[in-house]
Image (cartoon, rainbow, N blue to C red; front, side, top):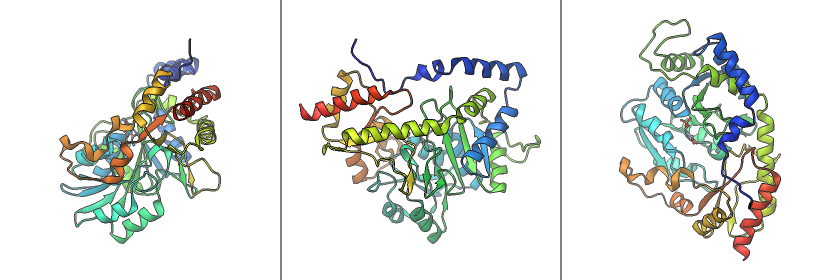
Length: 369
Ligand SMILES: Cc1ncc(COP(=O)(O)O)c(C=O)c1O
């Protein structure tokens, strides 16, 4: 049988650690501590320590996390929050469901939110900026924080894809008032279902976020405000604690694969690859995705699929502002140009060096045949 490289092998999330997971599930379940027990508080501490944040709150998923921290910050109807159009729709829907208006803007040279586009989008109703640390790379936070300061806006982060990524040595998720991380199975730190975490430094804001995520109750169970239920399950928390121990090795492997792609595909002028991992750059990337732009993108995708290589176009091929059925009515030329050419190659800990060789040989073959 010819070689197969799926984009992401979900069953291996379970099979590679099956024995350990069975024992974790048995331990947590036998203790009867399913909700808001020690495995959750332990993981929250470990996560906060890992990411250099004062506090972490386990939540149901990153989308809830963003909605909850925006609610805790207190955005009001009509308040505008500027986001990148190249992000999951979840970034926008969190703003919407927290009561605000998401304002998607164009991407810049680095395919992350454009600094100029942020400035151009500021109106008298703008209250905040929520950059997405996309594909495991942190945006130019110096510039974003400077704009926010100049216009008295808050900064929060969609760090769903970026746990462990750094900018000038500082961890993703710690630049603004709060951030959300996703533990969706295919994320760099993925669990066996939906889960998320909020990082926050300010103590007051931490308490508000904590209360909103658990029916308005504080840590002692006292009702303090209106809240909802978006808690992290204990079993998922225990699984995440176990996986966090090996997380730096996971990141190292992802960076190694990115380096291999760069070495083998860097000479193809038909492709624009993401920045290569470098020790002396401002950015330390965790490569949640290996997203590039390519000439003849659609033909390349079909060619690779015939070679049993799975590829993906992010967000089903549409940027946020292109969901016109949701009321967006904008033209963002750089983002639209990008979405005609973007594609992601497999990059995860399940692929072997020989898989990378096979993918790269196939890509080169496509352009050179
Ligand atoms: C950039 C971005 N934002 C938000 C989300 C939503 O995360 P979750 O599925 O945990 O709600 C994701 C997950 O795919 C994401 O990639």
